[in-house]
Amino acid sequence: MQPVIELLVANHPGVMARITNLFSRRAFNLEGILCGPIGDGRESRIFLQVTEDDRLPRVLKELNGLHDVLGVMLRYDVPAGVFDPRRVGEMKMAS
Image (tube, rainbow, N blue to C red; front, side, top):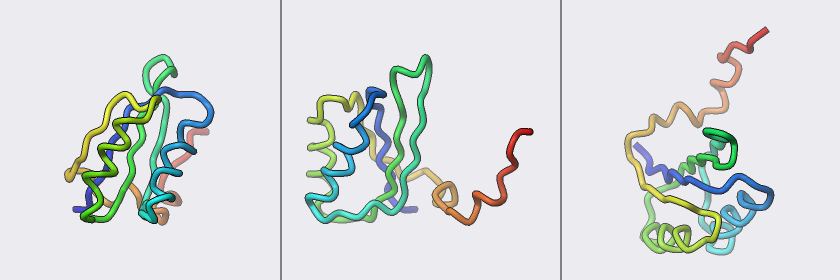
């Protein structure tokens, strides 16, 4: 399985931009992104699918240093299928 970075972040405008800019400045591609509010909505959980890379430890350290990032975890147990855009059509919408 591909590595997935799980982030716990403060949920307010600009947080996702700061996180994705960190990757952009290092020419590090994000293969997939999932994000959603948790609890009372003051925090969000973000899952970033990345490729295995020698720069990954440094990126994790820099993510930990961002003000709005409350927690960082590198995971290898997230099925790649959850990032597959073809599955969106398979999901049933509540009516």
